[in-house]
Amino acid sequence: MSQFYCREDELRKLNKRYAGDKFECIVIYGRRRVGKTALINEFCKDKPTIFFSALNTTGKENLEALSKSIMSFERPDMESAPEFRSYDAALDELTALSKEKRIVFVIDEYPYLAKAKPAISAMLQHIIDHKWTESKMYLILCGSSMSFMESQVLGKESPLYGRPTGQFKIEPLDYKETAVFHPNLSAEDNSLIYGITGGVPHYINKLDVRDSVDEALLDNFFDSSSYLYEEPGNLLK
Image (cartoon, rainbow, N blue to C red):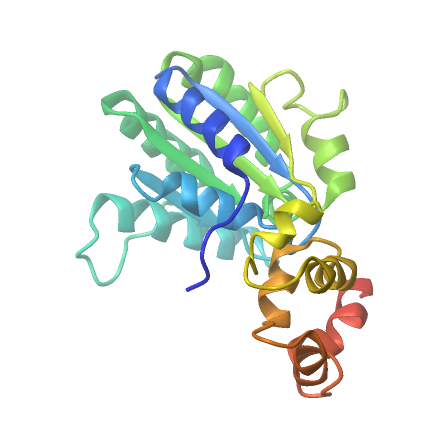
């Protein structure tokens, strides 16, 4: 498992809001591979969390996945989880849970859920306004589609406009932060790694520099079977 580096400022702010014990709706967005989910996982690791990763599929399959996330939180020992009959029923269950104690409810890849269930933003807006504002719910909406998150979650035309209590646009790391990954390497090598990866944590990990940047490039960039070889094409697709 890769270590968690940097993002201390974001982590501190997320924790400060958590300690406030009031309703929060935090929007976290940024390009793919920039470390959003790693940040959320680090924040959630010692907290009661329902983590739902939305799927690029149908509304029904997303409801099944959401049901599993809620049930595995409530009854971790159950082998097969009962499914909620509707999104309203699932959201009502979350309301009941957040009355009892502070819980973090994460929807990762929110744009997938909104595509599969177009009414979800309006449903969340209604439940935030009527039930969650007075609860201990700590809601995190995360997404990689920058245009969607800016227009359909934070923008004026979104039903959710005005509901987020905080937002974090996660940017690639700068040179100094990138160098933290390889403190044993020279400044020249670290500047090369920064130039090659653009400060994207996932790419820094995949480049996997040990002693020599050249060797890492041959193994992880120019080898046609390596992850990074196909990544530019995959990203453009």
